[in-house]
Image 1 (cartoon, rainbow, N blue to C red):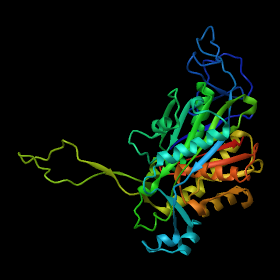
Image 2 (cartoon, one colour; image 1 turned 135 degrees about the vertical axis):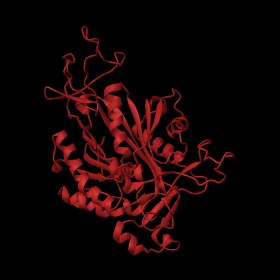
Image 3 (spheres, rainbow, N blue to C red; image 1 turned 90 degrees about the vertical axis):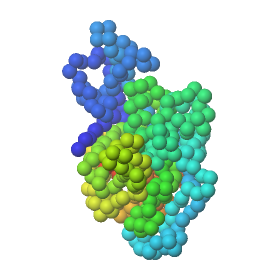
Image 4 (cartoon, one colour; image 1 turned 135 degrees about the horizontal axis):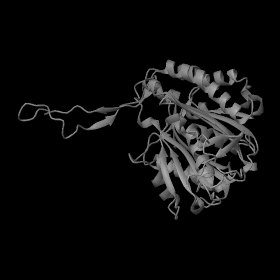
Length: 398
């Protein structure tokens, strides 16, 4: 099992000491040195970094990041539980009691996931009052790209970013957005970036078996985005994070790559040919619901508690709990474990189902737009799912 922990203090002083030879570098991109959460710069060309005369390394300069804009977009087609009951053996009561879901949105006609991602990103930029040309990086968190090589560059192109900022995909399914937030913070603190778009977008409706009531009832399509912006360390809005993966559990939730059956496999000499390779395609989503449920209610509270501890906070210090919207029973169980009352839990699962990497930013945007989440409030957010991967982060909105 691999894991990574992040620690960011809300107010991190600038460090004037040179990097010590025995300074330990964590995989999170942060170091613990004499009680301070510090950053390691790997290039002397980073803006604002001062080069050390002896070691040839830049000094550590305090820099924070904050969430300044959000947006979301969903397909026009709404599919209710009653609609599903016409094509598969199920009912509104059966679905809602077990999952909390009543409706979901599904891509149809000429709609595309890339277009949804662009719409969500534009809204986030508009709220933040940032021009597309001022974007330094686009992180497209998706496991269902519309191009095998990634959808990030197409989003960057459609946004009209004339300076050609870097854009790439992060593939971590339902944990993708949390990984995107942490990645954005690392790029800002360690790379000198100023404006990073983090987009969560998935269209799992294209990868489920619509005759399998165990999976097709759960998923919907959507996109959500936030703009993460550089700021002074005193304004830092990402306080701590905790990330994990366990490939052993991948058998419980996956979309595997499989060979297609072909004919005429025998060569003229009677041997089986291994070239040209056979054509491959992805199977439909496979999930062991009971095991995924057990994994989530066990691991997610632990991850949030670790992130809170790294941030020097407790559950009583957070204003909102925002989990990946997978199942209302999971959300309720995690809230109970952390002793967080239901009125401090954000949930829009009933209207959209499980939208994978889009679920956290979609729910956040709705909560911000409605006035529920206000500037300066602290949110504990956690994603979990395929991989298996899971992680949490403690952030301040605005």
